[in-house]
Amino acid sequence: MDAKNYERVVRMPFASIYPLYVEKVGKKGRTTAELDQVLTWLTGYDAEGLREAIADERDLRAFFAGAPAMNPDAVLIKGLICGYRVEEIEDPLMQQIRWMDKLVDELARGKKMTSILRGTVAA
Figure 1 (cartoon, rainbow, N blue to C red):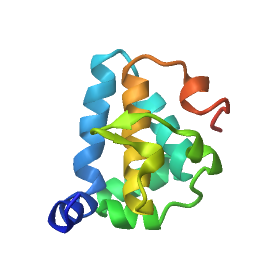
Figure 2: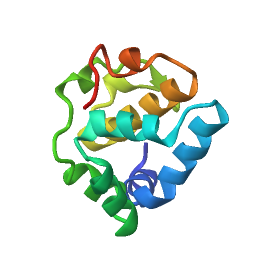
Figure 3: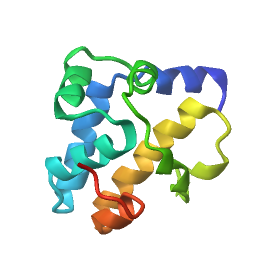
Figure 4: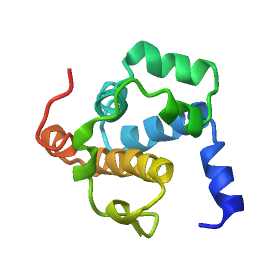
């Protein structure tokens, strides 16, 4: 990814992406609560933290920089997203963004929550 597109992606407000995720999973019969569970598992944000990230329109760079606790099992997320193997993405921030995309895709595809959460259950 060139520098211009990289900056465009990392400057996207989480508030602009979240409703797209809600719509995507909703079309497949999944709930906002399930989406929030997946995002909480990945980032450590609780429901209030996710709402704050939406309200203050922080960009993805700030969203991931401020994540309370990235899940150590996120390294188990594998597969293709946007034409890239998530496990081969070298830039840590872009990898985190693609992990999030991959988890949302798995949720929308109807995978079981234990599989999405790599065998764990979020609190």
